[in-house]
Amino acid sequence: MHVATPDDIFTAIAHPVRRSLLDTLAAGAQPVNKLARRYHMSRPAISQHLRVLLDAGLVEGHRDGRMNSYVLRPDGLVQVHDWLDKYEELWQERLGRLGRYLDRAATRPKRRK
Image (cartoon, rainbow, N blue to C red; front, side, top):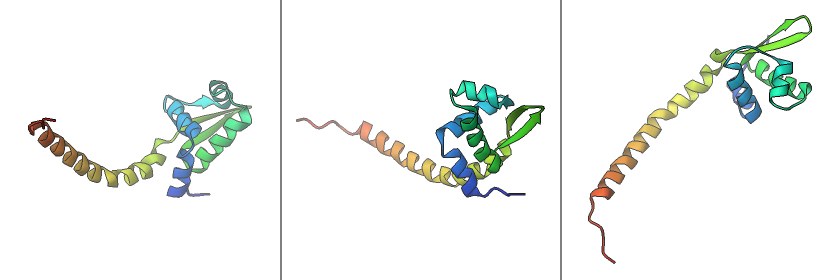
């Protein structure tokens, strides 16, 4: 069994169609045919995107007769959250500095021209 690496996950979410598919699947399982109609793409094109998401562990596929459906596996996004979380403190500190600068700038007397 293939274990998805962080690179697999970031590669999977790099494409806007795949990010949109994750958003759609967050509402619940969807059959491939319905996804293809929704995205105005061929079934093989949607299946390729779903395969990338499946290999990254971000979706799970189910087969019922001839119909394939996919559902979001949000736990696969934990690695993305953890990576981004490292930068939250940095941005909070920078935004705090910007806010303090803007507060000081707003209280300074205006220069006459």
